[in-house]
Figure 1 (cartoon, rainbow, N blue to C red):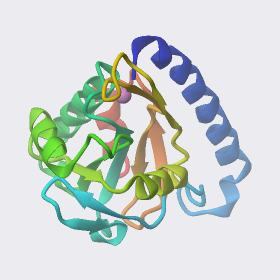
Figure 2 (cartoon, rainbow, N blue to C red):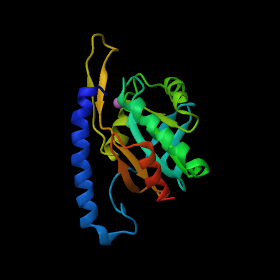
Figure 3 (tube, rainbow, N blue to C red):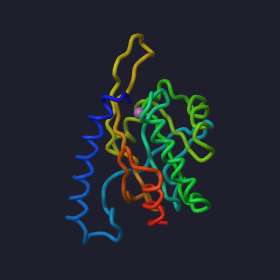
Figure 4 (cartoon, protein in one colour):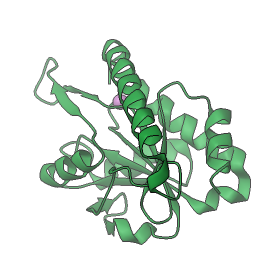
Amino acid sequence: MRRETAVALIAASIVLAVALGSWLVLNRGSGSGPGAGVDIGGPFALIDQHGRTVIDRDFQGRFKIVYFGYTYCPDVCPTELQTIAEALDKLGNKADAVAPIFITVDPERDTPKVLAAYLKNFGPRFIGLTGTPEQIAQVAKKYRVYYAKSPGQGPNDYTIDHTGIVYFMGPNGKFLTHFSLNTRPDEMADKIQSYL
Ligand code: NI
């Protein structure tokens, strides 16, 4: 996303964080973990950067970091992916228990091949997922991710405004916690470690 929309989305993320926070406080007694019962995430079937079909259950038993963005994003997405990569590096071998998943909100331009080339910049761990515009719309809705095209000079020159929340999901696929933009890699690593 663009820098100016990032500011608005950070504000929106704070609102969501507060809403999630109050939800968690109100429902503290109803689940087994801090985020138990929060209705974020769910089944999906998408295509990874190697062209393989990937479904949510392929990650059963592993923690998941789920971030929505797109490879043409000028600054926020690369920064966020770098933060996730650094946080996982800090965890050493324990990072193997965590699957970092990048889901594109730009399926028209982000083909598997484009995702593969892009994700190489952030180390070997990332799983990049794309699909049809309808499949992406469905999974984004399940994660309560907003995205919208912002036209550029030419038809293929658009940017996409999108939610910049990093979700952390448990081995059973349930939402555990989230990270907002500007979370530092060491903070992210500490928080993840507390769940492993
Ligand atoms: Ni972005």
